Image 1 (cartoon, rainbow, N blue to C red):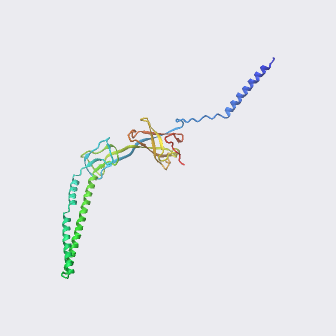
Image 2: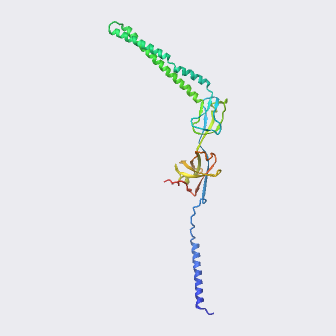
Image 3: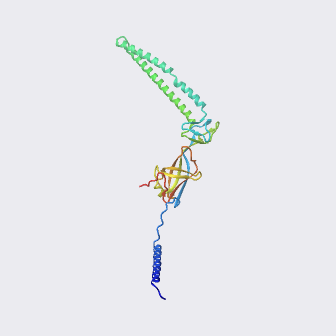
Length: 304
């Protein structure tokens, strides 16, 4: 068979192409190409869940026993700090206060003692003048001086007695205040356990519950590697699945000890809630990619 030059050239070209393909295939098998890293939020996504709760929840109690006189609140009512919520019956204490106030305001005895002290002081001074002139008695002057001193002491004793009466009045007023319940914070009443006429004892002093909802707290337990990226005032993005809401949480506390049984660290987050836009008691999630935080505003800065 006659092989011409064109056919020979075509055959060599085919052989070369096959050899190149074989070499490229072996190179690909030996060193696989590096796949580009895709920064996908769903890649190695970790979710840490907690629940929103009021920043403060206070169970209001009374100090003294007695029956409820007036209840000025109801569940769901918004209250301000220092607002009067409930009072106990204090008719007996109020009567005692009126008597103590009358005694504390009375100055008749003090005024009488002051007048008598002035008279005795003037008599002593006159007798002393006569003695200086050689016409008085030494014993009489001594007696007049003693009477003037005793009168001044009686005035001081009366003033001290009035001061004690004023203190007794303040004590009774303080006991009356102890029978009144005020709200220590601005918040919402969530429970009222007593109504007018019911008796409150020292064994069960709880009468109402008030919660502060202008800020919410979320407690999470995260791995140590994630906690290392958190610090006080760091802000992270949070998600409330039930209401499909997103919010920003500020780190309030990062546990200084990793729990040995779980290998987790406690982290407390605060959510600003001035308009009560977010509900308390719902599930809240913090999401991380791998071992670092997802992009937030602002981005968390790792600790040194």
